[in-house]
Image (cartoon, rainbow, N blue to C red):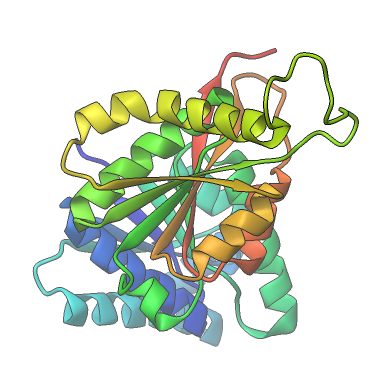
Length: 294
């Protein structure tokens, strides 16, 4: 059975942006859309009060949140199969559980008010760090969220973090019939002198050539699998998070990889992904790369 695309909503405007993006994404890939709202209150009081017929404001609010998002999705795409659910647990636990059975998990970039916004920011970071499915945080200007640029950007790191992200980016570009920018940032090590005896010619070209070679290797297989996707190879000197944030200004989606280890060990979200989730000018997809336990 094909897994649904899951979007978490919280009643905020950013949550509705996420629902809009998820609606378009589900239609694009022929997926069902599942809209969920996490309400810890439901665990303790919801069943008892529901049986008595006394439905307090918290339950009514949760129901309005999912109903509003679902109605908005139906108006946006009447043919889409949509289900809704109110989950009786906190947002982080609920969405991590949903991610186990989701094609991808979509959230907004902030919530209702400064305190809730900070909390949901931490939830988004936790999902991007731990979720077994791709996580998309919807942010940026309307033209970026609505796919007006016709361009996806994927950050290409090493094979331990990038392979799944690159394949995800190719699938997205193919479905959207848009261009894909594969970006590799490079830097000259500060500790290595320019007159190193192993270099022949301009040392700057040495590092740039290394980046280009890595990029070619990373793209070879997915380019063969998706021959209709126009791919632009981009090698840029500078910190990766600065390079990718600059590219996000004219992108519809920024795709990044993140390591996932089987077993008790896990790595924190890297600097590049953390910066993108906080500051990118377009939606950001963090795609997990599975690795053996160490």
